[in-house]
Image 1 (cartoon, rainbow, N blue to C red):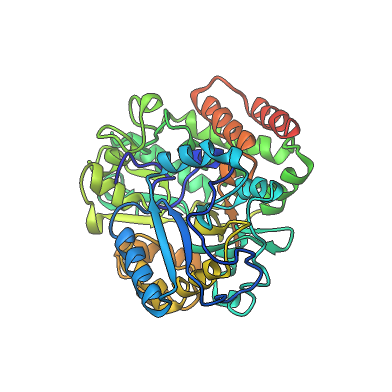
Image 2 (cartoon, rainbow, N blue to C red):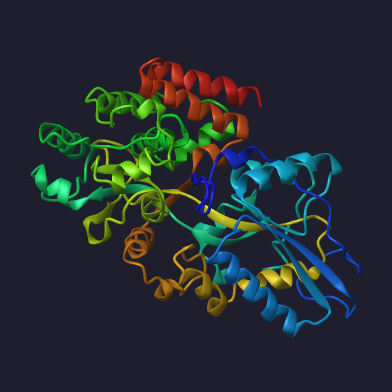
Length: 433
């Protein structure tokens, strides 16, 4: 994986800075796009921008395109595969055109909402109504705004703790911690055993926001985060408490030496620190094992996974998950064939082709049987038990607010900002939107 961050292959937040897309690619027939099925028999070109620019998923997409075109000889699906940074740059550059590609990658949330407001994407609620119930409701929710649907998911994952079983055993930890108190106790035991408890990419910032976000979920509950987005105020005592809980953790000095200058995917970064056995845990998404392998070593059976612990007395539940995935948005001027192609790649048998690679996780009901990787199964099992879901805060909220979350939490972890200042600064950013 190239210069990986959360946004590279499965889901990711700096990409939330993008606002729009480019004009269509060579369409020759009616582009009203008002129906859910293929239109006339005229020649049609559908342009599709994807961030899956390497195998295995690029190969899967190209194979499905070939299959679709064989069944629809009048349709050409033009795949434009880019890495995330090029994707962001190209979309940003052509924003002034006021158009979007017929199909393009989206992470949903606040960025998609801005695109909707700008009239760049199509409301596909009615277009997919005959098959939307085949999609995971949790996965689909990231692309729904005010009860309307603007994208189709093809991936769903979650953030949790990946841990080294051997290092846990060495520190005398018999089982993954289920509560915040147990988690802090585990950190203390690892420290006492001379083991760095947690690897963190402090320089990257976005990995740090996971801690505050999960603590906010556990202390305040999911509804509080949603209400904060609506009221544009984060000055909730429970959010301050979340920051105080994070300070409890940082006071134990749990992170690897030099974490403030560490990237995520570099040879001396967060993922490699775990893979090389130099730290016991990392709070990361479903892609973590593959990045560990790419940057260091494969821990294999020694790598375990557990959900973020419950916080005693909190309003949230340990079965509420935090994360994101990937989907495809439909440009406002896309032809009906674009949505018909989305239906095709979302058919269970076709979706399984991607899931089997381990590069994406099930977003279509009944395709969990295609998960074969041992680590992917751990995430899938946790997701199957989820009673609620929160999209990454730096994607769920407008870009400026999400960036402020990342920045402020990074400063909290570094010790230069208080829990009260964190919520005040995020509130200021939200009210400025």
